[in-house]
Length: 227
Image (cartoon, rainbow, N blue to C red):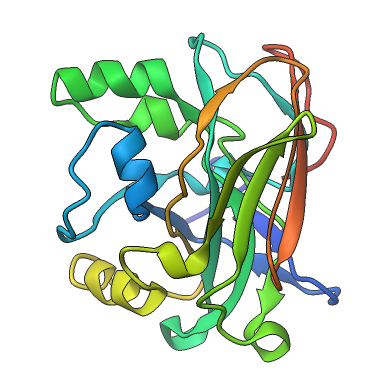
């Protein structure tokens, strides 16, 4: 049969030092994987099994100019190490990601026991840096993870502070879904999350992996970079 309209093309993420791109399949995120962030959110940092939520793959953007999302007055930043899976669900590489969150919508959903979808899965909610290949950077299990807003550092932690390691997260997630090439896994954020206003300039990074820069534009503005 013929398609009724041109098929959807999967979003692609740049690969550092290469003219190839990474075709993104799904985005999985883990909640509360740093005890410091668990505490700042008012929760118990006991090492319970990790829980996961998803963002749509078309939430990905290469950074640059990101519009302030509609239907929120409380947009928050969360900087994260991202794991990129290749053939055989082996780790292909790592990137720096931002889990942008409409915190007011998320809080309202939590209060009623509803899904976080609209709080986490909106357009341009997942800025990501180019992916650094394992062959170039190895498997970082310690190193600074940080984010500054308008030149002021807000989040400053270390990958070694993760409650669940990358391998443990992947093993847990694989109990629920079949991990496949193209999957991206956001591995949680350290303490210091906070609100963003239109015009805010974000800069963040993970030692040995890369950096990302984003400017938050007005609601409804048109982002400059392609996804």
